[in-house]
Length: 289
Ligand SMILES: [Zn+2]
Image 1: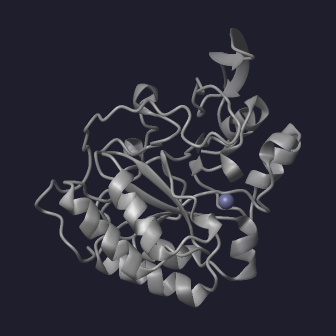
Image 2 (image 1 turned 90 degrees about the vertical axis):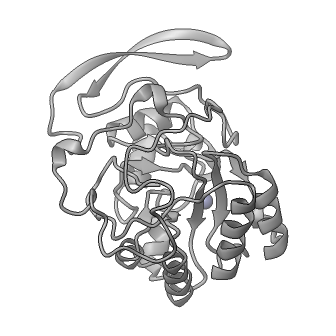
Image 3 (image 1 turned 90 degrees about the horizontal axis):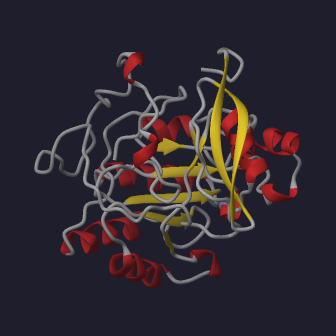
């Protein structure tokens, strides 16, 4: 649904400014969500409820999933559109996003070093039965370093991460909107660069019919840490339902690292998000984990 295709609905939208809870009435389009957790800067996981609710609405249960890739995603290729609804607001948190399961979401931002590396890692992840959440920039897609169609064909999800990776909090409302426009990925979920957002950013996301999805575990891989260090940190730190932040141009973006995370987390009784087969390029609220 585009932002202009529906009527106007008024929402009560609590926004915290300077520690005060101020009730604002905003006019948003009907297909948008109401209520956004408190804005922050560089907070990453702020807004996460920290709940460990286990809810597995989709896909096969534990024991039915193994390595290897199913041919299609049963609910996400030709399924009825009526089923595609936003996750209930009460269950949604900035940190965990739409992942309502106990599985750990492995997410990678920005841009791979080459499209060949992207293909190698994403195919390898699919062979391991892992479904990744990918947030490439529009500039990355335009540069030819990231093939979104290929990523979806391998059963991964591709979400918006702005066009040129600015701090969105320094832009005007229109400036934020242009950062969320093509060639940036047009998706229901997006991750503002650096995790920086404010009320203006939140309004722009809402106007695009999008929700923010940040993270709950920050690997700080951009420091250039060795693959082994990142893997050990994830395997030691991640909890049920966590969202792990990594970057495609850094050292954990490798099949070997993913294999070690999958195995290491399994030793602690944790699964990573499964690969449920081809994802749709259409904007969808539905994310299988
Ligand atoms: Zn980024």
